Each structure stands twice: as structure tokens, then as C-alpha cells.
Amino acid sequence: MERLDKILANTGRWSRKEAAELIKAGRVTVDGLPALRREDKYPETAQFRVDGEAVSGERLVYLMLNKPAGLVSATDDLREKTVLSLLPEHLRRVGLFPAGRLDKDTVGLLLLTNDGELSHALLSPARHVDKTYLVRVDGVLDEADEDAFREGMELRDGLHCLPAELERRGPGEALVTLREGKYHQVKRMCAARGKPVTFLKRQSFGPLTLDEGLAPGQWRPLTEEEEAALRRAAGRV
Ligand code: URA
Image 1: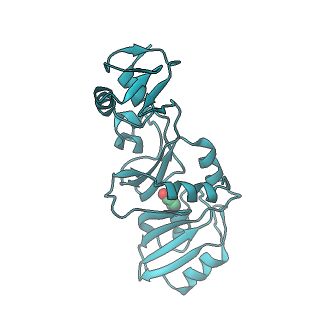
Image 2: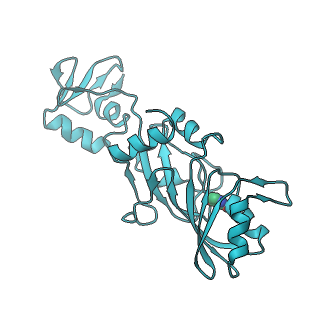
Image 3: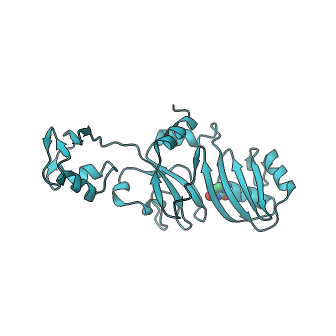
């Protein structure tokens, strides 16, 4: 048995306060009868409806986060604060995790979801989902760097990098597009060119582009169009 406001909040669709408001407004029924109090307890097997629509406990959630620097891309960590700490409590209980990782000091677009299948498909090395980064380096980028990225690189540490794109934006700034996502890949590729990365921001991930209206640390749910585009990119139409 669980409190009604908690059962509704556990779906990730409403906070407990919002759930209480729905109950107060008479918009919630349990087994066909209007629910009266947020603190009333019900078995999870009861049929819950809001505005007549069945509420299922399992809902797939997709959030776009503008990751700030200083947080790790993990669900829990003994020492460091994770990106999940940016979410309100009711969204921390629906099994969200980052689809892919950005380094602690990397900022920008991070997809948070509880859709394991979609995440797996998007991150599969075979699928080659493009990721674009704004990169600043210590040094001056030149045509030889563009050529090296275009040809694909074999790093001295053994990392084999597929052809990528480096589009110069200024002496020490470029947009880099990778078709894969190996550990510290942008930093390692730039370091191999003798130009260490000083700033790294992911601007796109497959069909998703970072919403510039999101300040660092802010997030929003994906739109229906973004969700559909993501499903197409994952081969799950
Ligand atoms: N490449 C990196 O080196 N770091 C990131 O966080 C992402 C891509």
C-alpha cells in the first residue's frame, strides 16, 4: 500500500504537490471512484486515472539537459555530484540515466532517459550516431588538423578513430563531428595533434540539437518531434 500522491509522483509525470492539486481538483479516480485525499493509501494493483486517462507506473521519460561543468555523467557516485542531482525529486525515482557520457568538465547536450533499449541502440558503435562538439584548444588549428580528422587517426595509445570532421571557426576554435564516442575521444584526438582541449561543449547528438534557451544546469522534456526523430535515429520507427 502506498500514498496516492506518492503513487502518482512515482510515474515521473507530476511532483507530489502537483498530484495533490489534481486530487483536490477531483481529476483523479481510483478503480472508478473519485479520489478524495492525497494521503489515502492504495495497492499498486488499483486502476488509477487522471482526467479519465489510465496512469501507468512505467513511463518512458526523455529529457534534454544542458550539462554544466563539475558534475559527473552517472546515476550515483560515492564522491562526486551527478547530473541527476539537478532533477526534482519525483524525476529521480523513475530510473533515469545519462545516455552516453560527457566528462566532468565537458558541458552541453546530454540526454537523460529511462529507455534502456533506445539508449543502447543510439550508443551502439554500429549505428554511428553523429555527435557535434564546440571545441577550443590551446594552439592554432590548421588545414593539416582538418585533414588528419578527415582521414581518421591512429593514436599512439592504440585508439583507432574513424574519419571525423573538424571545421575551423577561429584560430583555436572548431566544430568537431564524431561518428562514434570513445573515451575522452575529442580530447585525445586534439592532444594527438599537439593542441590540448581547453573547452568542450556538445552541441548535438544525432537529431537532437542543444536548446540554447537552456542555461547550464537546466533541462526540459523532449518534444514529441524530438522523441520521434530519436527513435528514427535508433532504427526504432
Ligand atoms: N570527447 C571528450 O574528450 N570528452 C567528452 O566529454 C566528450 C567527447
